Amino acid sequence: MALTLRPTPYEEKLIEDIKLITDEKSSSKAILKGCAALKVTLRELEETKSQLFEQRQRANKSERILSNMQRSIKDVMNYHD
Image (cartoon, rainbow, N blue to C red; front, top):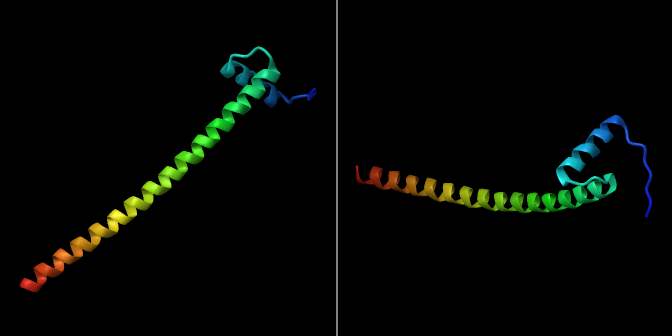
């Protein structure tokens, strides 16, 4: 598959950066390798976001339990006064 584009100066700089990061001399290979790496990174990001959401849910549940316990202790202490 042949694909010919005329990159803007910004895109040329981006391609050069990708070539450095991927250690590729060919712009096409560097772009493909960069896209593959980006795909993996995005998948990892989604997994991390999912884990963070689950941790937040557990933290919120723990905070509610702690709050209920503190309220119960306070009620017991006030009941005996």
